[in-house]
Length: 125
Image (tube, rainbow, N blue to C red):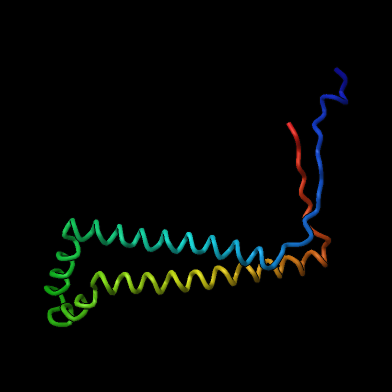
């Protein structure tokens, strides 16, 4: 075999444009998956802590330390309030991550106009 046949073939391409709407849709889908995972983990964590009795023991501990103020502090720590807070945070995460994906795509397109793109090399084995 000659040295020529032993060499790996490589293809070089330049990435010069990322479609704005595709980046927005992809970042929305990724953020939606992350939001579902956040809600599921919160639900699972609350369920485990409640079944182990840690929520009730934490409530009584804070009431014994802070008295009436501790009882008022812990009274807001319910499953409904925790899940509402989690859903609001997840909604904000979806909005922010989707917007950031679109902004980064626009910034990449502007940067490629200046520097000429991102060189990507593909090789075959």
